[in-house]
Length: 265
Image (tube, rainbow, N blue to C red; front, top):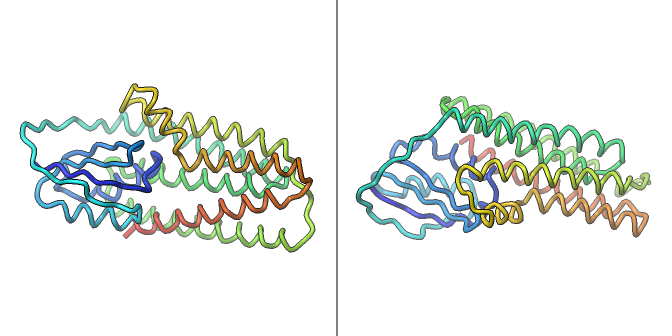
């Protein structure tokens, strides 16, 4: 048995862990994987050479490098609990879908593109968790077909969002409701924190690791960005802060499309 440890610089939240798990699902040489998200490392126990695993990881464009690969003795494989994983994925999927609907609805009502963009970021995570749920005990072909469909839908939504932001930059639009922006983003921040807690509690009971996960998540940064934008809308009485944040988040969502398409290959 071989133990290979990889540094994955862009792995900073559980949704990326699920992408990696799905990407490596067809590697029959892998016996088990241990994720250390705060330190952005993945340890893989496998037979044979590490290069096929590295190539699959590198295809995700998460800035992967090999730290070491050494033989191990007295290896014992841990049992993988499909039922437990399905339950966990359903929970985080439900949370993300709920906040997608909440942010999308309140975003249009409050005229905030920041909230609309953040809702699509929630939808992107929903795609990832949904794909992971289908992948548990499912076929690789089904997983890839669903990933490809999700990627196209996400790409369309991101492009439409960017076009709408540009239109609002050019035209004269009503200043968004900053109070709604801030309140809903705080709720979404709590929702993301809950997802991170649920995904990590079964792997470690250390509070510092869960806290590290929460504060290194891209989703949390996006939520904070919308909160800051809402505050700037209040201070400037302008819709520009909201539009700028919305544009940035739409580009982040668009970047996620590339990852999903890489997963479907």
